[in-house]
Length: 542
Image (cartoon, rainbow, N blue to C red; front, side, top):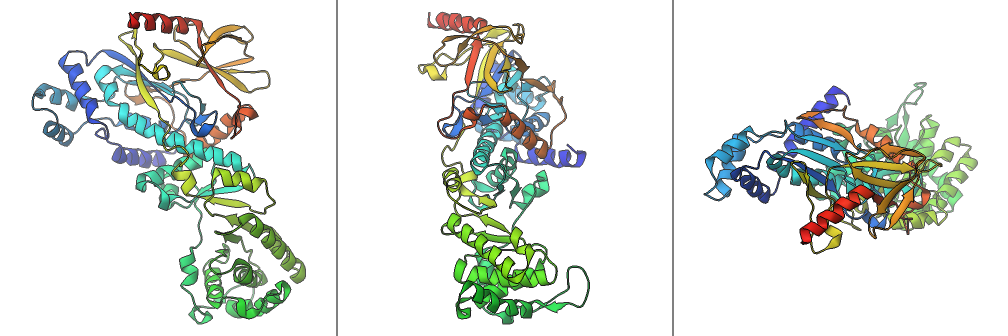
């Protein structure tokens, strides 16, 4: 990541995620650790989720960069401590507040999946190691940074899979998002998940995401007649010859288009024509307009073709149109037929390559339905169903203690699905001969690395059934990314993480990428870890 971009991102994270962005009970626990003299005990926590989102078989891991920048700047201020004194019980000793003022992440270490990795339920995404009180206080902030980021990038990846690799995708959900921070995060992590562009200008400025946008219905309906086009002339694109009156050129083309499409000239809305001409005068090389303010087929497409032909006459290449209501598939097919007919009749080849954008409440379901119908939609804009993740509002990441002072810890609980796996672990991904990942194996840190081509016994999570697996390739996943208070790897750019996502998804078997009724991806533990789990569970019960 370039130094200027890294600095602006660090400032953004520092201002957005101060250490006080946490829950009160983190401080009550930290005080109890301090009061009992246990605050310096070495503790290990794991961050993971229990179920893959959206009924699928995978998730994406996002938010690590922000976690590392948060840790780097973790420090309480005098103002923070003054507020804590006002809200914690009056019996809280002054020495605890002095301790908080000295606290930082200088003894914290983190290893994790690389950001942008494909991840699965119950597999630790991050392992956080350090003084018990410190790593306890990190919990809420780290969960906040990972939960939504991973959820929305996973949602974006699913929408990308539903749309297919060729169709371009624009994230346009800022106005529908859960507040400014939700909107900015959605733009960033949608791009990481596979979207091509965003309408969010701040996301483009902060994260280098390509931005795109043209006009709303309000712009078009603000015009009522051609008299409102005050500046009418446009110079040819090649700079040859004088500027010509674009209004007159468009008016000359409109009757010919109406005749070709057998539409009466009086049906065409003059205000819409004025809006299109004004936009073409402002952006002659970026002429893409919204067609459905009045009638797509009786006004919008005729006005567009008239102005587009006038631009072509001046050697400009019009870009295309956007549909925002009605039957997007059916309309797109008819629009393509019209563009090709105009191209043929008027001998204007530029109309053959026009883009058609669709943006009417697009969802994963509607994209899959779109694929099942004839359509000519080149680009889709997705808002509400992307940024709000209505099918699953939270990924449900948790942060659980697995070791204190070298001794394994676990949560037993009344609900077996919420039990945790004790001890520090190594995470291995096993690949088959065809290059696809088929199993994530959790083993204790001290165990030897599984050998390629050698059978390994393990227990599959869920039913704990025994299984023997042989991998053609074994990859140790976790990487050390934060060591003794310092970020220990080069932070990737947003574009780099996006590239990693696509490479990671390609390692999944097609059946596991399937959006509906996917094949199960297995997660297993080594026999040694299983025995530790069994023995510790029995000792806790007794």
